[in-house]
Length: 285
Image (cartoon, rainbow, N blue to C red):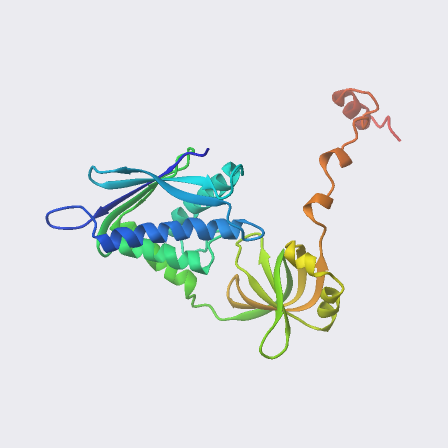
């Protein structure tokens, strides 16, 4: 089992550092939503494998809670998933304290929750400290760095740059297909990098390619590469893609394994250094 997360909250008052009930509940709730949202973005099929449980609480000042990851289904190994989620959350919160840049796997709902997490430390709370364990750096949110982070999140969510369009492609997993109110066929694709689901309007050729495939390709979250006109709200923030072509990529289990591409007789029985020496001397034709 991965190490637990220790979540410490301190309030701001004349007689006590105890947080109000409202601030305490809201801060823990937003923290849970960040963990859950990042896991959803990390997972190719948006499925949740982790159930976060409160496994400890400290009555000393300031208040501290211990959160531990448990599998949602008995027998499931979630160690890698939990570690991955904690790494991305720790890196993302750290980045937002210094730059107006969207962290990997921080979707719009996650950014919104992170903004509230920081803003609450500037209005009501005095400190929120997160210790991730697993040798990951701890995050200490104080009023000073919380103001900077909240401003950075606002800049990321409401950029000043002008919208633009370019020809290109995205690659990710197919989430669902449907029609909009105008009868246009739509694909929803989830890129691996940030987990922000992108709406793709399938034009004629793209529509024909999708129609050749089975419904099971959607249910199995097949990997696809979509080509066409990409519309951006601002730099790097995709609003929509008008698809001219859709390529269905091979599933993970169909990709070549190391055993398929490694030739154990590559050097013809020679040691690697002897083989390289003969290559340098031009002894192989």
